[in-house]
Length: 63
Length: 450
Image (cartoon, rainbow over all chains, first blue to last red; front, top):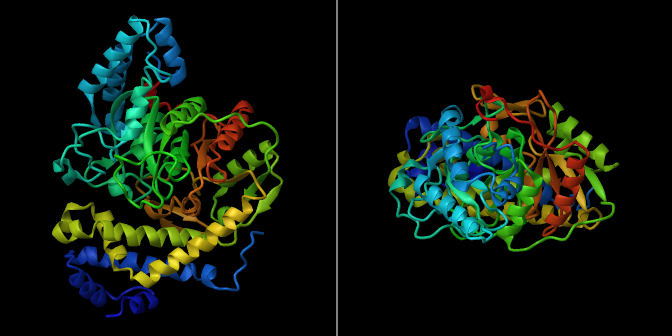
């Protein structure tokens, strides 16, 4: 699974997340997996939010 | 002994012979016993050590020696500072079985060498990952101004213990705002020093490129003295006008009415007529959020593999999500952080002092667990630092200053300066204190604390 792709999609689906955590060797309960997916979705939104700063056209100067 | 006296005034009373250090410590233990069951600010009390140190201070004074500029100052430390002979828990119950620290953190040693007396260790979000000091192992620390509300975090126990008058000073750590947030909600001074200004040896790490240790106090003079002793430098007074701006944009948009009122009062008092919009601040905050998740997830991955159930449930799901972040996203976060830092540092060429909210709101109710930010209801644990995180990523120092508002719940204002210019922070804060804008209001705590 391409981890970048699952974050591009706004955060991983539960199945993908479980598979990825298994690959990392981390075991969580089903309740924790759901909350981890919520947190991963939040991280995906933060990644999207910093694109402004990565855009070369973004203003460097404060206003 | 009245702990409403500052640490400096207490030292003067000791030297005048009107109090004894041992009596101060015994009074503090009695006060903690009476008040702390409701607050839950302490996780451990170092009874034997504190009494021994107090007796050493008394002996020095009896012999005509000066125990140091912080003689008899009682202090506490967040439970991630090494204390010789004890395991450093970092807010994780299972770390009570970790090897005991073989020496004190350097900042503790420096305070004690100046005559201060370590009383105990304080509660925190597990591994410093949160802004609320809700800890599944050690319980929730409550706000001394309203026991139904959060003290903030992650250094919430350190802030609450000072605000309640249980100690004069305390130490916390600030990675994303963990000193400034609880200082704001508990109505005391809290300093995030310049990254690297204080030695981190003996402090349990979280995100090393952003971690700093720093002090809390009810007295600005105490705060400055403690900082200078820990930093090993004495700052010269700053004279003359300061080029001051109010941070607009991200910081204004995410501030609620109490935070805006406090910032405006501060700006009016300091004559800050300019609004400055750091247009990349939101991206800077997101960069800090992602870097924290990525590095935190990797730092704790081995333990998560061994036994994730040993972690606080609220922490392990954040570490697990962070551990999944790929390197490409981390690289994007670093690039965005670099661009925001460049914008911030360019702005600091034009201004000596920036003013922003410390927290978007007053302390939220524990039962709610949420705050309103810019029209959205969001998690308090993850978002109380929305105005502190962008500053953290720059490495610049910032002071959360309590705004006087008797009869109302506290809120703080962030004073922000260029790296290494804590002297400007203290000068601006002193002006605000002298004008009656800044200062600590005592919590009632049913009359137990005062």
